[in-house]
Length: 380
Ligand code: SAH
Ligand code: SF4
Image (tube, rainbow, N blue to C red; front, side, top):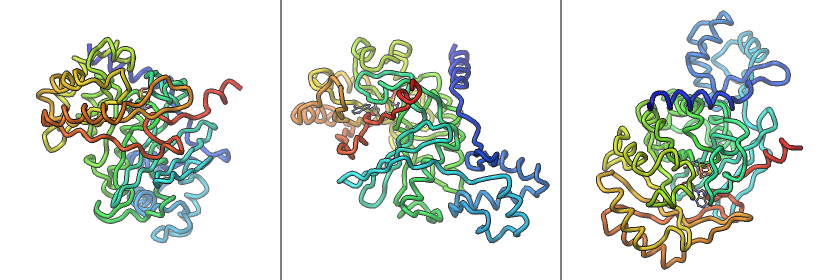
């Protein structure tokens, strides 16, 4: 059953495939190719496999985009590469920096589609929040992205490209040695789209990002948030082993059906069972349960107690997210008092329950506020 369901999800994802990564002049993008694919390209050019290793270093360690500056590669080979390939980045359609330092980019792809990417700096580190789809097929009632139709999936190049462009913006090349002291030190896959409905492209992108000879970000610094695509959670845990965050938001199926309509397909009991068997979950690596605090909807003390009961036995922490409003949204943020009481109950049961400080609200960069104009553009 699960195997068939997984196959169905992967087949459906193919319908929303990204366009080929090719420039108008026919040159192809090397970003987003797996190591094996890059090697195959070099062999097809009559080069040795070693050339792929060199290029990988230039592209993902040095951040170099100009073949002419790749000094370890002979001039004639540089020219041969430049005739056929580019090392791409998304075009920056807009960039805004919040008063709290959060930065948001609107990136445009070759076909004109756009997504938003956010960087959230902390004192001595920071997380880049990546998008995985243009829009989202799901329509959670409190989420701005959910009001936008799914246009297509992002390709691996586009997912890696968001991170590389963010690094460009802060001049964090070459890749700093070791993981300490990096500004762009973490990735959260919490932008636009449901990552597990674009699993293949995302997996390829994260594999590139985790490669030790390039960007080399460890899986422990990557957190993927899902609204609960149960059949793909096992695959994700087994193959990628990244940290998991689950958008729970309600403690009864009745309410969760309304808030996160995917719950009708994968109800709470099934979702929590998938969490219980998620590979690598332990007290040292807990699963994060995201819980958006909606005033008078899901924020009572009884619900906090029920949440604690549901999570029993799961190495979990709870992330309480004050609802971030957006134009036309029907909900209100919980009162500080309700937030505090809810957090206290969860805390007292032994779960850490930080209240997520909203970041970048002034530029609509906070959780659930991202949305692009794709739908309108497509209709026009
Ligand atoms: N699609 C994935 C990941 C992106 S959303 C998912 O749903 O998990 C990242 C988090 O922000 C999710 O927990 C999501 O439910 C939450 N969120 C969405 N809209 C929000 C809003 N308006 N205010 C606060 N959090 C929101
Ligand atoms: Fe999609 Fe996540 Fe928004 Fe739900 S919360 S509509 S799954 S992006």
